[in-house]
Image (cartoon, helix red, strand yellow):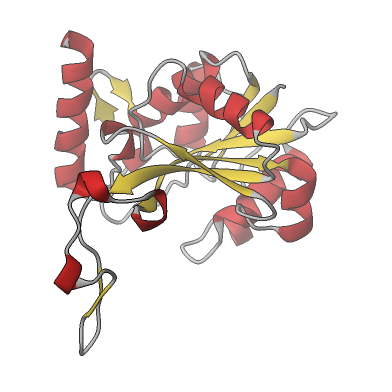
Length: 227
């Protein structure tokens, strides 16, 4: 089953100026996501939605389609990713629309060569409506507040290897999402209906928000090249 990969990349970035095109081991950050999608057999087109001429030019140089710039009213700090995804589906993707679409995030550039293909196959086999990439959380979790509340029984502190499936926590790591197109357009939410969870490795969960994150990602990518 083919899908379009929709990559969102705004021009404004407060934590890291020019984050989406910052150099990461000799190529702009966004190129890592574009190339990952291009290598995937399940991807028909890689479409980049951006409000920045610079990002659009870089994305085209790396082989992505950028039919138009994202309108200003859905490009600000308070605009949702969902509004940009809807705009891309309605105005940027080729017709006929694919039955599902992939939403990989630029800030999580580490991916195995078959990650998207394996996730798409899992999505289809599970007959999911939406899916997110996840990472297993090994820590003992607490809910914050004036009085912290444990999300486990401290009197029966479990060993990791003794945890049952229902006692293991996962987090959305933001690497990618997959959605059925019709369901997304109806709900305008990336997670809806029957939701699947696709577990990835720790490196694939690394996300770039601060300058220090860039160094961690560069180190992990370099290790992957030489490992």
